[in-house]
Amino acid sequence: MKAVPITDSLGVELRDLDMSKPFDTDEVGVLREAFDRGGVVLVRGQKLRDEDQDRFVKTLGELHTFRWGTQVEYLSNVIKDNPSLAGSRRLLFHNDGAYREKVASGTCLYAQDVSPTSPPTAFANTVRAYKNLPQEIKDEIENLHACNAFDMYETEAEQKRVRLADYPEGADLSGIQSYEHPLVITVPHTGEKALFVNEFNTSHIVEYGVDSQRGEELIQTLFSYAYAEDNVYTHHYANDDLVLFNNWAVQHARTGQIDHNPRTLRRLVLESLNW
Image (cartoon, rainbow, N blue to C red; front, side, top):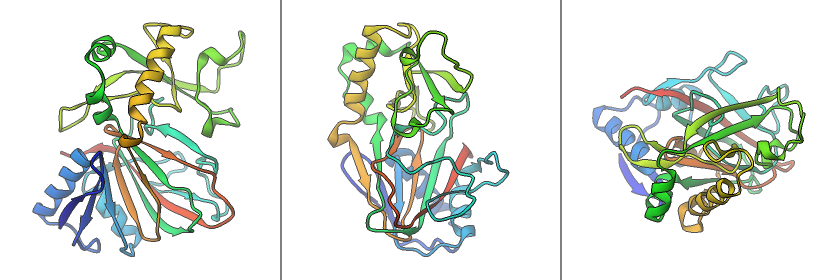
């Protein structure tokens, strides 16, 4: 197995591996290192059975069970009676589960059936973004927290940032899930610091308050570093592409609208890591 950088800023492509069988000890080590340091792991062009993808992801940890009782989700515009709520519009940059206490450790997408017009997934390196911050900004945010929220009743939720300041006084907030996380987190295993604010879920900085101008200015500054062009890798899918990403070290976004052409990604989520 070989690990080849995808870009200078993030990502590792694994080559010369056989996904149809379990990895040996050395191969597991390469996979873990790619997940930890690369943030995004890419494997191209292998026709995978469901059990092959399952085994690959379980090499790193325990799978999340979705609310409908299975450990798999299909992001698809062709599967009927699909319980997924992923939608079809542009999806802003986010960390999976940022609005919950327990954040997912990672996510894996396998392109079972995609079209040339299928929107890509973009990835932003939040470890590199933190490193690039001026020292005075690092000092300011070191002990601050962000309120991250999701509105289950918002029809434009896929492409609209949830800001509690935008809700009118007396609005029904019963459909909003939220949790406060540090603006700066420590990535498991590497010990590196990463930004933990995103353009989908981050409402405000707790210590500055919901309506704080300084808090909003600071959030926008952090976004500018996280989503800088040289800090983002955009993956355009071909059939049988597999991407696995570290949810602590990178954020992801769907960059466009899904059209009438087929787009089916098989999705697994890592509940926790096993090393």
